[in-house]
Image 1 (cartoon, rainbow, N blue to C red):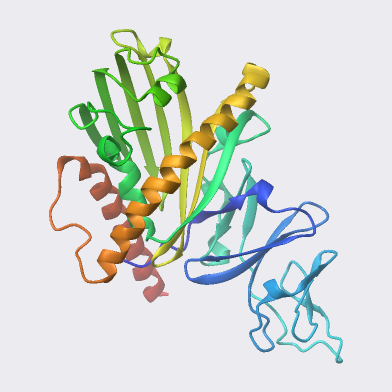
Image 2: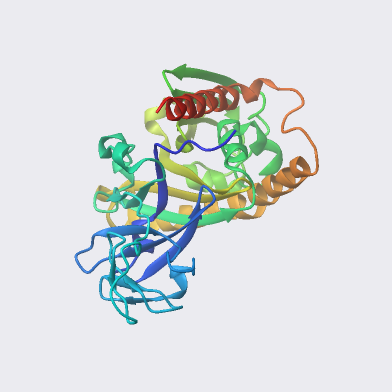
Length: 344
């Protein structure tokens, strides 16, 4: 499986890119440098000077231009060379650009055919917009392929074993699990009843430590690798509306075939005032611990085993259903994109 290119990927949190600064990352095996102009417009250029392929990330920002640190050629946000300190600007002095959009507190990049970059196809993550909600946001770089990340979030049965003192509980594997597909959207829904969760999770849910709880974890997957997780808990036997829940973003963008950019966030209503702002930061920091010290360690070791010749899955368990559906959708979309390109 290669990458789906004619789609929008998360490139960064908006706050990661300051005016007059550049940010270099690799997406889908391609080096890219991002920068924000004085007008707040965001730009994405190939991280390659067309003169001798020197990385532009090693250059300097001069106003709304980036100057190559090797021979001093300067390029504007359109990729056009606007200054050659050695003489006239060569006609071939142009850098590839990528469509980049700042929306919902996130930067979205299009790695495929620029002519097909339809902004209406950017996923609605308005609930992650810091102008509208209190949002806690973090970023991790994981040395495993993004397909493993997709399956990890869509199969939360693992939390009973990988996260026993943070996110897990004994009842997770025995709870109700359902998966469904709606067009190209895949859902994974897991719930437990009369369960006891770790003390730290009970605190997050707002229930007494050691109390019996009912909990839910509903995950929506949108191609290529963006997921929304609605989760929470309530005192056992009480309606979900009385419980405390939160919505999380889990967005993955391939860095290479075997490494992934991971943006995750959690949000609370502005109506909660300073408490909501504090809660967003506290909970996203709390979430980072299992994601960084448990998920990351496991997935990176899993990726290494696969690289050494192991199958990604020799057989399947019931909890794999949603992940299998998502990867089949992704495989079909990539095949359709490749077939269309061959017909052109």
